[in-house]
Image: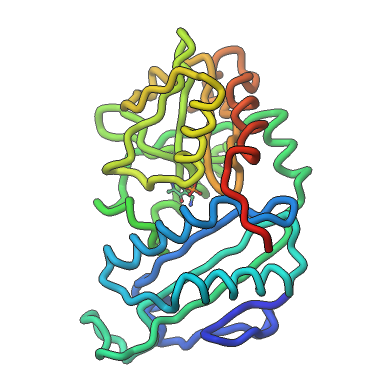
Length: 285
Ligand code: PMP
């Protein structure tokens, strides 16, 4: 495997950044994960737009132009021979003597890009059986709309889910409203057939897959409502599912040990998944 690190293509096993990197010292960095399917990058423009937004919200400089970045991404995918998989891209505020204040003017941001092929049969199994989730009280900071590498609450939540025999955790508010998964956005289909997901202005990451799934819903003629929903509503839903670039649209069949509907994946999530790739923006490698 080959990784891109600050202007160079290096062996993945030897790829490294400095121990004083602010990503390592302070989680002072942002990232993107993007799906690649059949040799095409899915929703690249939206992912790069969100990266720009994350950087500007943290007052970080762009590591390179969008054209250059796109070239490097494609080169990393080519060198790793990825046709179906993902690439991961991380930008930090650079390496500098450890000090909370921003580093001196002119400190170069650190940029790393990795790519890997994924096994489609693993996802197929999740689609066929659905996943179990647990709910946890939100304990993250106020700016989860920024895609930062500061993911400790998400890490602990995921592990807590695994320890409980579930696949994922969903953060909820004190009054029982669903926010989002530890690495995916949450959706339900109401008993009367409406597709619902929470507004993304505040309190969650505005998922790229979420945005494109809304486009897909329109294409399929589904009734879509962007509003908050509760854990109780999730229990009583006709369907529940999670969206992310790595999973696209994964059915949720159990919440806190209680089945959603009949405990089997629903048809709406399947329909969205089946139409997703056709609707999404596709960029050749
Ligand atoms: N919420 C969180 C907390 C995430 O980490 C992710 C995945 N990066 C998402 C939502 C889904 O976002 P996307 O569809 O852009 O992958």
